[in-house]
Image (cartoon, rainbow, N blue to C red; front, side, top):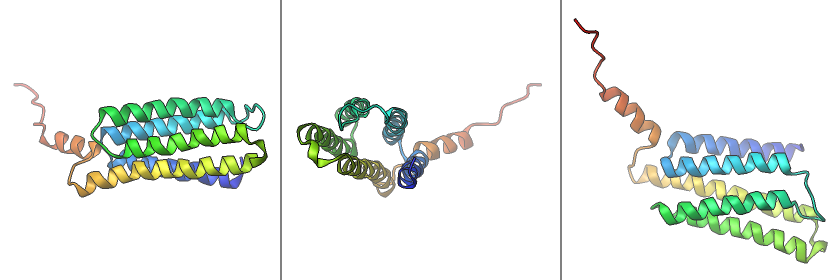
Length: 155
């Protein structure tokens, strides 16, 4: 793994931790899907057919389906924007198949840039939640524990 690739995965992980700590259920679901897609992509990145990583493309299609599901079922804006970026990633794969002279590095670089935009969409969802005054799942769980009465030991 190259240092740039390691930095990419480290930054994505840090962003997902921030999302996990400050996000609601929708943001947490998106972060979990994003980390699962990154982990699966990391495990299958050596599977090439021509100049396209077909296994990663299939993972990206599944991730797109999850983002579309979130966009249609939840009341947040960021899954729709993230799905748009994911569609652009899939179009890059199509461009690499149709125009092999584009090169592998340009395709991988473009998909990484768009993947970072997806993580920023997730982070934007957390920021929107904070600015709207909505509490995160973590904060609401802490508040619920504080409200619970102490367990009685019986007499």
